[in-house]
Image (cartoon, rainbow, N blue to C red; front, side, top):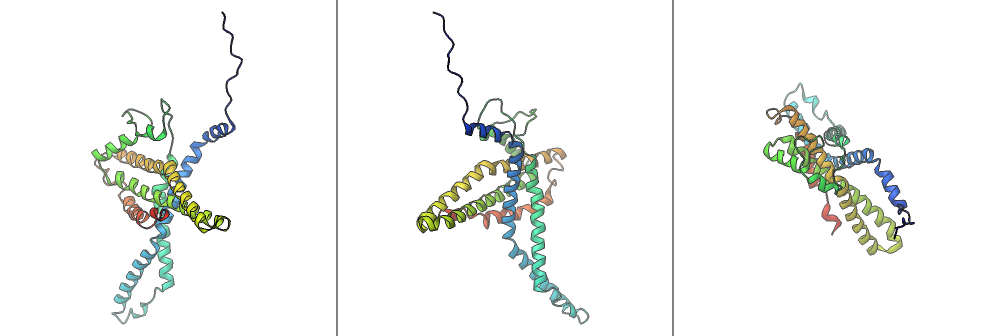
Length: 269
């Protein structure tokens, strides 16, 4: 008995699927910009915590200068030459310059983020874990990069990604605090203090996890790739001094980001 072709047509994709596919065509543009923005927000949050410390350093240097010039009659008029207002402006200028330098070192590599289609459709995190072949033209994977970090450790290979992880966490916490404050203040008159507080904390944790999962690990991976490429380009002898000044600049910001600008537990208390 001859078979007749089925009269049912192929199921059409839904509206949200079409929108998702349309927006997915622009991932090459908004993913690097998202990574750049997240790192920049984290660097700014970390730099804000260093203003008071820089002002303390400037005050101590000014005190040492005043003590030195006060010993001599000729230079005694220079005592209190730098007023408190000037010291405050100087500390803010140093913090701003530090922040812009860290943005240049940690955020700018995010603009080189590119996604390569995997031979078989798998999750993004799983494809990044797969070890890439040495002759492959695509970006290196987590396994390949970590293997080179252990076999050929350099300051740039370790400090840049770890500092990026710190500022990414600080940036995610900044977004979570913004969500928490917005939800709490807008929901409190409607649902009361208890419901608004619980909802705000829950949505803040969701925002923290969402930003970290969608953008955070990609920013760390991109900086690890950039550091690895820079070290491989100069050879093993010069790799130790490659980007050493930049590592000195970003390391304190990374520590400040984790220690002072990442109140992760505050969303759960």
